[in-house]
Length: 262
Length: 325
Image (cartoon, rainbow over all chains, first blue to last red; front, side, top):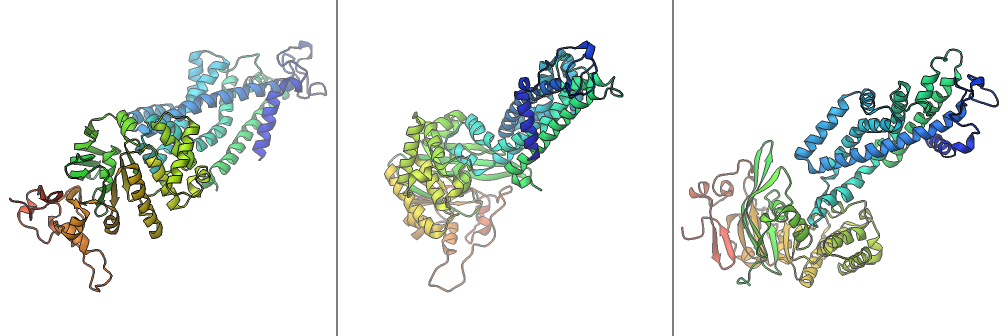
């Protein structure tokens, strides 16, 4: 419930960003640089005099966009590969699962760093890099689910009615795998946003002046002792967004899959 | 009748399962014939290969199982030579369909009855969704469902076992198949429903002019419903014939034992049992697979596999007690 509130606030902020602040997130105002929080700039200004509140607000759009596109790519690829591998079995299963094992063997942040370094630093490449790191989890999950669903009697029954493999996979097995996938997607949203911010922080992700939270935290780290507001507010925004998605994921799991409730 | 070309002929069908413990020789040379508009009962103990025979006909044997030899000739065409695509496009659901033991787990819990039946219709017939749904409702009505429009909108868990089996039958018959394989369609239902379902199958089959392979372990059902009977033992059909022949003039010692072990009302003597247990099919007995339990076993029985001998027209037995040799 708390998760739902946090996430709806987060989404609303992202959607209505232009109406919530009068400052442009990348407009510089050098005379007022490092302005401490005041009535005019509740979160203060950064080293180039940009309003931090509006940067945090616009940053929510970036994080949300990264999160959603990554999930869309990773969950679709992973689920389709997992279901197909699980249903067909044999050599195809073996190949797909060994590739997922390879991807899972690397720490995800390091792998994402390597991929985004190889592709070049930009927001799009960050998305691709994280997507490539995130799909194996879905493949595993979908395969496991498929293996149990495919033994069900009704799968044999639709086969006996002459349904093709494609039809069985996509209209009978896939829908049965969806609820754990949705839960996993929500739960991993937070992690993905963290990875994206991490990449931004070390300079492999979004590039300045994009108001991306990781980049902002990184910008403020030189001033953290005296001008604490530069890093703290994007950091707090990050904290609430990730917390929100984790709580929402837990909540969804309780609703969609009551067996897992403790 | 016997001069007519049979709808389905199975010759020397062998299906093996490659398990870690060894190769399970589930079917070892099954021969079977089903004529047009005929109701054939396939009886035998649990694990003798009845279901495997049914699944083999539709080629639904999955790894680790494999059909390794034989012929399944359906309307003059060997099903084992067709590709997987041809099987699902032309045979499964269209010419041959199957109903299973557990009707409720044979229906996908996430779709309504109506949409599942119309899916089956749309797999083989070019009709739009609305027309398919209309046909689904009409076929549900033919299975004697009260209020078929409402049932079509319900999910499998909302139906009783008997209703779900009617829905399965509707689905199986939706494309007007020539052969229906019914794998113990009534074992999970209670006795009153059982009678209704069997009656329904009989009715619909004569209406749809289809044949049925009724797989069961219940000799009572066979006596009441079937025209022909095939008795299976450990992966072989040991006796095949007309219902009356099998019940009155059975030849094979196993059939004899099976019929004697049916409880009778009047006689209060101890129930007859066939000695011993079903053989392990990884290392089945040499020769006739029944010989270790057979009261009439001879030396020859443990050395050679007995051939099918036609003792009377349309009545064949696989036993050395009969035949010329």
